[in-house]
Amino acid sequence: MHASADVVDSVPIFMNIPILYEDDEVLAIHKPAGLVVHADGRTKEETLVDWVHAHYPQIALDEVGESIILTGGGEIKKPGIVHRIDRETSGVLLIAKTHASFQNLKSQFQARTIKKNYKALVYGVFKEPQGTIDRPIGRSTSDFRKWSAEYGARGELRESVTDYQVLSEGEVKEAKLSYLDVFPHTGRTHQIRVHLKAVGHPIVCDKLYAPKMPCMLGFGRVALHASSIVFKTLNGEEKRVEAPLPPDFKHALAEIGLVC
Image (cartoon, rainbow, N blue to C red; front, side, top):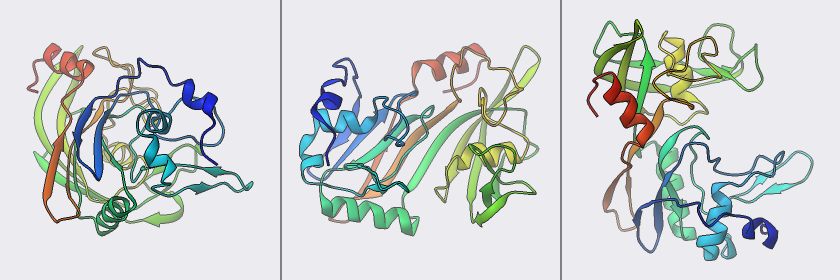
């Protein structure tokens, strides 16, 4: 069953989601922070999927993509959605417009050939200017919402690898901060947030993984931005799509004199 008309009609006209790239097979959008990609079966809030229904109804009509089957027998439709980024994370996200494009992108994500780059502002300074965090991720024992790459993680521990490079360092209110390029090679839930916390450098304003650390520089959400993605089209052409830094990121970096 597709989303009902009243759900689609409730999508505000002012939900202005920038389109970064588009052709006949794929759409790349700039997801704003605060917008969840798809429903979770528990709440009725508006999602990116509602925007797809409203602005690209053919994707839903053609049933492009895969659904989530809930334990109670319900179904969550995800038209065109081939990957996701967290609610509080801003940045580039791909949406498949056709079945062939969906399978093409899905296979690239599974083969880990899609290159993703994130920008992150984190607490503390690193001893080395670059490095690799190679730590399996499992469930946290302290909070069902959280994941962990530290001792005591429970459940299946899944391989997770993240590269990082320090772009610059700064200080505000006696707190030292680092601005990073981050390159996840796997796609685990909360991977970047979990890995950076595990090495002692949680992301600024990450209320889930660093609740005792102060939000600063005007951030009201986790300071993580999906900056670019590189993928191949159906004809094998490599495409790179970039999402410019949003205003909150630019303001924060300017305030502490870090380069954009």
